[in-house]
Image (cartoon, rainbow, N blue to C red):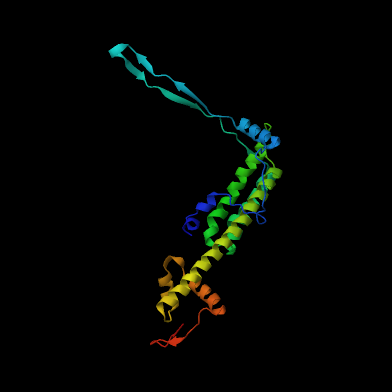
Length: 239
């Protein structure tokens, strides 16, 4: 829960399987696809590689009279960055996606607040993927076409769908833990508790009274708890 709230998972590409895992036996000798190795090496060469070189110290004199003018050091050559630009079509496509994900969906209320950090990062992640896909063409071109961006958006949308799969699993697990805790508290107390009292008793397992009410309704329908009403001194009906 805390890692979701702090936005840690928004920094990762979350991927879930499309089907349950199948049993498989692998040979000891596993060969990597030569095409994949060739393409990855081409991308590596296109980006360049940092070069480290050792520079000896500059010393004058000898014996006890040695004096270090310049200490030894390591020089690092960093290849210049590869700059790319979006074509007009790709830029228009990206703007539409950026608006849809970072504005329309978030303002519609359809996205849980905990997932806002993921959604705000998707457009920039799409650009990063599009640059890598363009680089995989292994030529000197520096323009990201709409075809590159479309492929990147397909991948991002897969990540977005998988995010909701993981979030739903997490929510179901949280609800189960909360319902077990509520039942345990009621058994331990041996008498009826209000929603507020239950919320305080379960501690960090529930953030809001609504969460407790939602779980209580499920437990009530399942016949595990009963709802009682009484009149308080101020004439309010307390459940």
